[in-house]
Image (cartoon, rainbow, N blue to C red; front, side, top):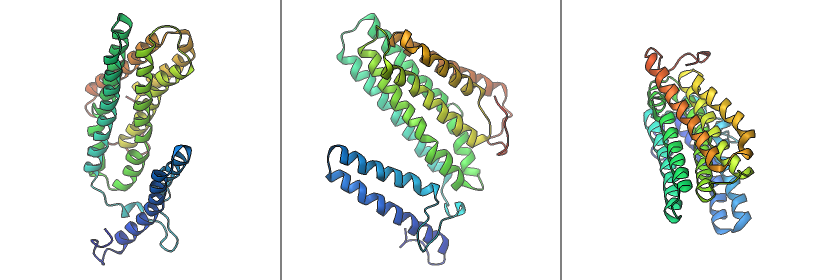
Amino acid sequence: MLWAVPRSEIGLSRNFARILAWLSASGVLWIAGGLAEGGVRLGLWGCAVAIEYAGPLFRFWTPGLGASTLQDWTIEGGHMAERCAAFIIIALGESIVVTGATFGELQWSAGVLAAFLAAFVGSLAMWWVYFHKGAEAGAEAISHADDPGRLARLGYTYLHMPIVAGIIIAAAGDEIVLTHPTGHADLPAVFALVGGPLLFLVGTLLFKRTIHGLLQLSHLAGIAALVALAPLGPLLSPLALSAATSAVMVVVAVWEARSIGADRSVPARASAGAKRVD
């Protein structure tokens, strides 16, 4: 990029020089981690991730070059939204693959079948919550934004992290339910089964708030329901807890779909100070 950018584009050239400096530092840690083993590898890779996510936050400040401005990040917003949506599809698809592979290795019983159904419905609800209007509105908003760099940094660089993390944690919970559907849910099971959907909803709530300036009442209600469900987790079986969290996600998805259908006048993005809820 430094070679391709015209010399007249000084701001853009310096922007890529700053990014190069930050990614060179993280790149050393990625390679060193690949050559290391065990905890050392995880530590080096953790530092590399921290550097890469700290870069946009500090606008890639570099000694001698200063910091980039958000206007320096001349991105194609629609393409970025599409790539992030594809990554969500991959995460959801991998969670279903893991669930299906675990299910295929087990001896089928009523409990195992019910656990698989609850897991699949939960994944489907996550897909519905993210992609029904939300992803489309995000692509439209960032494509027409005057400051796509700001939306890209907050909405797509940072707020997609809890969304993907929630999907991964929920998938771990689904695997726990498939292998141990009965009995009482222990702490790891409660954390995965409730924490995964909760983290996902928090991420999507903040993402949609950033995109169109609205607080989704359906998401707030779902978050409240999951928080209230967490203390009851140890009293329930993993199957019952999984069914309950999947039901919450379905209610959130249906509620949002109905609210959007009832109000077609909601703009792609309201003003930054808006606090309207669906």
